[in-house]
Length: 333
Image (tube, rainbow, N blue to C red; front, side, top):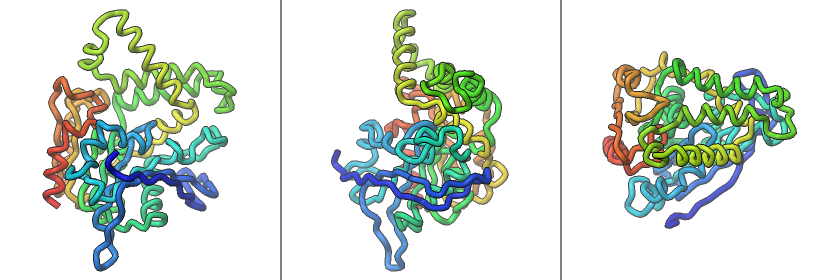
């Protein structure tokens, strides 16, 4: 890795959630690359906030397919010149989450709470008072839209990936509800007090796999009956080791308050939204992105065509496919 990584956690005190629940302290874990640079007025001018997807963490952006394309010398977000901040959202990674011990007694955070905590991490702990760029993938893309609404003058540019700026409905909501019901309706869940992961977690994973599937890539990876069965087994094994049922329940329930649509005119920073035509979560035939982007003062919508390189919903984590649009956005600010 050609860039120095800093990793730490901070504690935010007296956190009150929109649900009315409270926590005396919330641990937020984060990773950062580079150092903040301030102008003569003390304003940070080189900070970049990158926000991960549902069930992920900031660590995902350190994978070679992402970091080696964007963070290296002379690349778009060269860590020698940018201060790159990669938080683990509440409920995720090494930040406070239900599986730490509170289980289903953990406060029911929503996307609005998550963005508020990200802002506190930056301003109260890291001393960042301005961002050059906010970008995010999937859930992080949705958070990026909210950043543009709630803190319109805090950043110079926005890049939401694999997301739509409307309340989650239709097939997207139905699959999410199936995931929630698979866990909640399993007697072995025991209102969150299970001793072993309940079987409903596997049923939830089944729905998640359908949700993020890439038909073209899956056919290429598993073109035979036996190959498909083995591929499915491998993915279920991977996810079942990665997820906790309570954490997963909270991941998907958190989207309940997401609805930037009524407030899109409040976004003033230039924004480029990038989706992929093979994204089963945000399929292009909905036409939502193209319709809503017209309400932004400086908005642009990109839907990448399906190619052998796109990865469905996961295209968001392959910047080789969309970095040209990021370059144009950074040139315009």
